[in-house]
Image 1 (tube, helix red, strand yellow):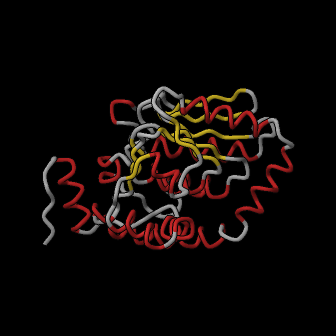
Image 2 (cartoon, rainbow, N blue to C red):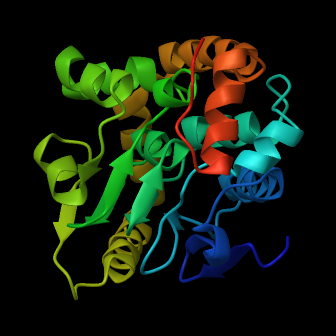
Length: 254
């Protein structure tokens, strides 16, 4: 894997660090593949007891790399992005997220599959799928209303409203919001170390019990969303919205 994804295995914790600062950690097919491979490999590795997903101290991820998505759109459930989404959906090892700065699109929806989420108070979470002529992904159209209720989920998904890390904790989308100067990455690491020190069979079973009533339906919805997303991505509204984004202009929808 290139240096756009840093992989560290130490103290029974797998730490996956997004490392494309020049693009605010925009996610490419290569990064998705690396994430999926690492998370899937961890399932059969008894030396790994917890997984941390993080960006830098200033940015989690700006979401999908738009050029990458337009040039080679995801095709089917075997594409890198869907392999990653299935990996976090089915992970038996605890997933811990550390979020600083922007967490756009999949940068927020992937958090719905994490077990513990640490955010900076001034982190910026946003799911602008409708704004871009697309639809929700990662099972978020099922998981978000289940977690927050329909009105709040509709506000975030239909309007694409941005919320702060502090607000994310208030509505139940994250566990802890850390003030400026408090290292979010360190907080996530400490939580992962605590989990790694717990009896591994009990941790896995408890996570399985927590997710057993939602996992199958989340997977079904994720597949439905993926099919719609792929269709919309080829449509005129998404093409116009994404082109306008790249050209830094206001989109015009016919």
